[in-house]
Image 1: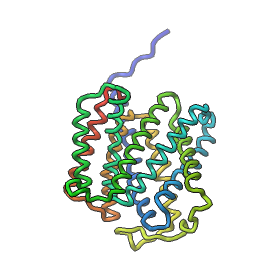
Image 2 (image 1 turned 135 degrees about the vertical axis):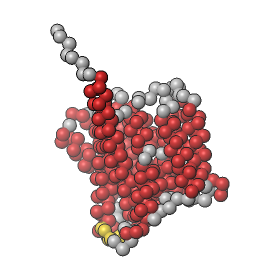
Image 3 (image 1 turned 90 degrees about the vertical axis):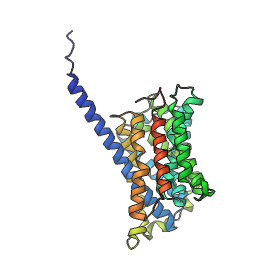
Image 4 (image 1 turned 180 degrees about the horizontal axis):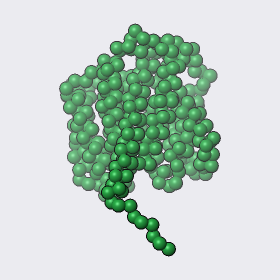
Length: 325
């Protein structure tokens, strides 16, 4: 048998560069959609018709119906699960997807969006610490530098020297969102490495999140009338109005399903570690969108703190010697 000729090294490098460029573009597109999602979620909750709990319920349930339906139609065999895996997927859906959305929505109703996301993006640092102390994975010493940078930056972001000038509920919700986000990443990575495809994983995750919300907040008590109300778009667009249902539709489709699918497809071109690093652009982009739309502004110390936190995140992402790059 004659071996197939190998591609010239130059062509292999060009192909790798093209694939990487596609992966990075997909991640940035997802991040941009999430950035607008945060602003719209804040507009909806601040309008008073829907609470953060109800918005998280709609987001999870809408995503479950659309995504699970699509996977059932196109790849039904991938939805098969064993009894043991069903429990795992239930924990993933509730503790990961449901909680991260809920705590994020609570956080942005009490804090500026950029600040809430900077705190939430401590998740990669938590993951690196988990790898070091619980999995006993070899970790480079730069992890401690990353931790120091992140904690210093966090103290600047929350203005710790002033006794914590920021809303305590917002800070606590942001930290809880960071823990839920870290749990989501760890559980998803664990299941993907054991053969579960990303589409069915997200589909089942959102289904269990939807079931959780239906029990926690029965649908018969849902304030349906609030969906048809017109609300101000706030900030620089305060004179413009839109029905709540249109904003909620964006949150479900373009703020949840589409960016999640973009991120999943990005992993075909770049590694999870690199995708997560690129995703740290979200606090920056979301902060810019919130500034341009809602007039949210950060002080010099908070901007400096955000830069330190992001630097710590990037170092933490490269500290795990066992991480896939």
